[in-house]
Length: 271
Length: 302
Image 1 (cartoon, chains in turn cyan, green):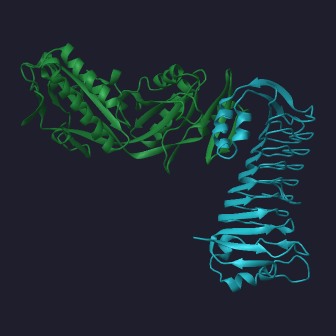
Image 2 (cartoon, one colour; image 1 turned 45 degrees about the horizontal axis):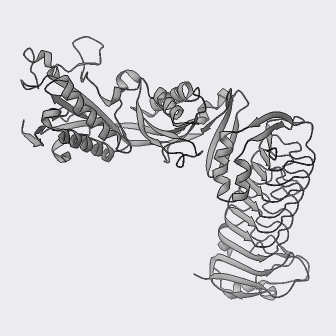
Image 3 (spheres, one colour; image 1 turned 90 degrees about the vertical axis):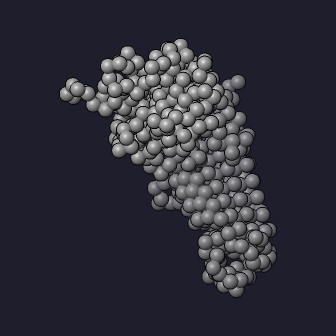
């Protein structure tokens, strides 16, 4: 079955809210009905048909072509099926996802995967700040699923991570895994200062360490743990490059002792 | 009793009477096959019969390092009990005392299924607050700090209510040497069958029992009808030329695995032949009144 294809006509003059364009919402709609969906974020009305050329297909697979970083909330609430984006996206891509797969072949703006509970997000380029993190006023960030970033991630990646796995194949900005509640964050290359800042529980793996590790993390020595081997098999399904980091002994730091102190940061790069 | 013959070995026209059981399976891994095997052997020790051990357990098969969750050598173990609560109790005690304690070990679910038994969820308290919960790939694990690193244990394992216990073969021979040779050949064949175990020592029992006793409070006692030294004194089931009887008891995760194991055992005995092995093969039953599963030997001939 052919996918439902939305091709952006031109770079929009305002940011667009694409949260309605998910398979379970479009499944029973006609082409005309889809074209009438309002996606504006200002007082000036814009419908799907104004911004996109629409080619109907199976709504379980949606393809967004010539995408632009003014497209916000792509795949928000995705509950199954697949969305493939050719190009960049704006903020909150895949926010509150529960299942399905969101593939972004460019880069994503801030809060990608925010509050997601399940499914898989793959970002071929870079991710903006607070990947998987909560919006203002929310207690927890990502609560399940997997996010893979092939490039770099911005600051605060995995902020208030509650459950699930974030894999960054490149570098991460400052405060990766800040205020983590649980879950797993893997950064294959270097991370910015203060990883795991105020984390309570959870696991952070930094393949090449961090610019500045807080003194509230305590060195527990170098270990070759079965748990990391177990994790390797899972991570390899999503990122062979990140799995390599887990396949060798890593130095374990326990913390953040400024709070509960039941979290851990594994640091590689010593061999 | 009508008798059939396979390669000179007489096969009784009778059946093994077996019972519903609850069962689970584990995969135990370690840094080497030796230590995975050691943990499995320790865990399945003193688990020959539910009559006195609480459960019946044994090694199903060894698993290569490419097939285990953590990429290390492993062993799959099966446990059987008469109730879910007893199975939970035995599982928890045996993993805690025999697997958690074994160097380098880890323990994972060896059976899928909707119904679950607590594994790491019960053992995590050994971590005294330092235990770590990890979820990935749709599975939940516990990491407990121990003196050689960490004990990794999956949170739960599957439970099956389709399991069958009490499949059996009575191997009757001229003397101890030839009868044991036949029994050993049968056990080797039974062990090659997936999802089935022979829980007695080396897979073989020499003290087949009947239900009850002349003594009050003794639940099982010797099956005198199959004791060669009582041939002339009791209503014996043995022919004059039978000098030794050994039994293989088989438990399986489902009726088909028990039938396959019994079939494999009979084939191995028949292959060895009457001159080098057993003269006759029978099976134990209670007249068909107690166990819902009847495995007729005539249906399992090679």
